[in-house]
Length: 461
Image 1 (spheres, one colour):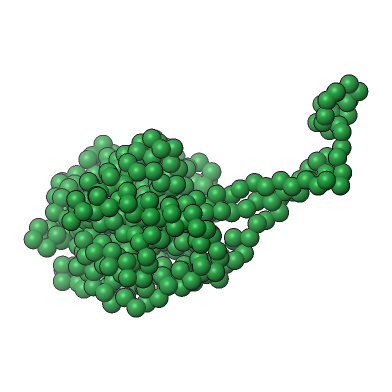
Image 2 (cartoon, rainbow, N blue to C red):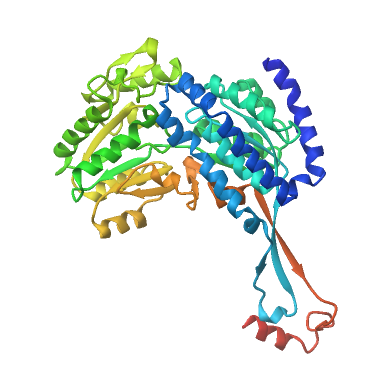
C-alpha cells in the first residue's frame, strides 16, 4: 500500500497542476460549491468521523463535536464572506503619483500540501483545507499515520466527494511524507512538532517553497493571587486535560504565586475529581494516549517530581491518569520538552518578575496563559513576553475565535490561519498599478536638467 502511494505522488501532483492550469479553481462559484460539498461531506459522515476518533484516541462524542466537528462553523463563515475576501481591493496612491491607480488582487498559489497531526486528526486536516479551497488551490493531503482510523476515513470520504485532480489524500508513514516533501509544491502547511517542522522547512527550502508551520512548545500558565479560585481551577483543568493533554496549546506547566498555591492545588484536585470521578479510567469522557511510544515517553516523565494526584497507568489501555506534579526542578526532564500529555507540573514563584524571566529564558511558546484580575499586570505580561497567542483568565479558547490569527512565533511556528487568515495564508496578494494614456508628466524622464529641485520637493529633502 505504501509503495503504491509513493509511486502515485508525482502523478497526483502532475494531475493537479494540469487541473489548476484550467483556471477552474479561480472561479468564486466553483470555490463556494466545493466548500458546500465539504460541509455536506462532514454532515453526512459525522457518525463515522466520531467512531474513527474514538478508535484512535478514545475521544468522547462531546469532544469529537467540540474539538473536531466544530470546523463546520468555520466553513459556513468562509462561505458567507468569501466573495468579499476574494475581491480586488483599492490601495492608496501618493498624490505626487497622480494619475496612477493601485489595487491588490488575491490569487491562489496553485498546488499545496497539507500535512496533518494525530492529536486532532480530523480538525487539523479540514481547517487548513478550508482555507486552501477558499483561496482557489488544489491540495494534496497527508493525514497522520498515528491516527490510522481517521486517516483511512479521510482518504475514503474525500475521494468520494472530490476528484483526485482537485483534492487527493495520500496516506502512509514517514516514507510517504519524505516522497511528498521531495516534490515541488506552491505552499506546504504542516502541523506537528518542532523537530519535524525543521525537516519540513529544510525540504521546502530546496524548492523555495513557502511554509506554514504550526508547531507547539511549552505553553506556560501564570496564576496570580488576584483570581476567582474556582473558575481558575476549572478552566485550567479543562484546558490541560481535554484530549488527555494531547493539545498543542494545552497549559504545559503552571507558574503559581506562592500565596495562592495551596488553595489552588486543593481546588485543582477537586475539579479533577468532579470532571472525571475517583477513577478516570472508567470515565466515558477521558481519552487515551495515541500510541505505545508516546505512552512510554510520558510514563518516564512521571518521575520528575512529587505526584500530588494521579500517576496511575495502564499500558494495555494506553491510559495515564490526569496527574498533578509538585516539587519540580526547572531542570527536570519534564521541563525540557513539551509534555503533550495529561501531566501538569506546578511551580511556585514569589515575585512575578521571576515567572516572566523564566518564560523569557526559554523558546517562545505557542500560547501563554495568565489568570489575574489585575489589569496592570495583564498589560505588563503582554508587554514583557512574546508568544504565538495569549489568553487571559481562560485556556485554549482563543483558538476558537476565527477572527484571531492562530499561529506561533520562533520555535512554536511560522505563519497563521483560521477564518480570513486561512484565506490569506493560501493566497498571493498581487500588486497591480494602472496608469492612463490621457496624461503623461515629464518630470521623471531624462534629460534631468532643471528637474532636481522639483524632485527634492516631492521627496522632502
